[in-house]
Amino acid sequence: MALAITLGNALRRILLSSMPGCAVTEVEIDGVLHEYSTKEGVQEDILEILLNLKGLAVRVQGKDEVILTLNKSGIGPVTAADITHDGDVEIVKPQHVICHLTDENASISMRIKVQRGSWLCAGFYPNSFGRR
Image 1 (cartoon, helix red, strand yellow):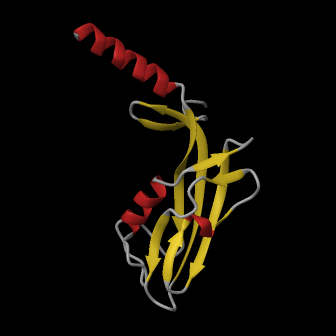
Image 2 (image 1 turned 90 degrees about the horizontal axis):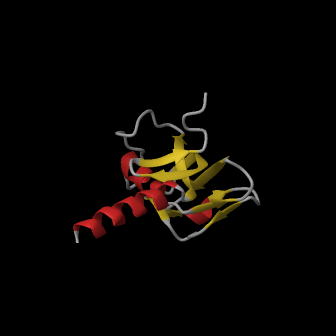
Image 3 (image 1 turned 45 degrees about the vertical axis):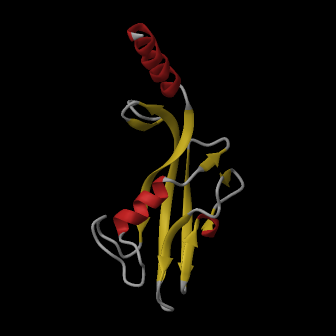
């Protein structure tokens, strides 16, 4: 039994280290200085918005990094379908909720950097990680 666990963990680490994918690595939200602040007219705080963006599933073809933009105003949910992108990007789950705007005059504008990389035990590493 102990040998099976040892082999299983080694196999898991090898498979995860070679699994490529894309993830959100940077976010810039207009009018926000740091992740512990709030934005007027937005139900969620910035930290919760960042956690929701972490769950964004994106496929990028032919590029190592892309910049996506999101601009939305008025009452209602802000979803992944509101993100503007070029033809090289596919939003896997467009109904994924990022935040909710609660005021008619509320708006949110952000730039989202998505990079291609690999999953390691400590988290996501872009392809450029470790290169100088």
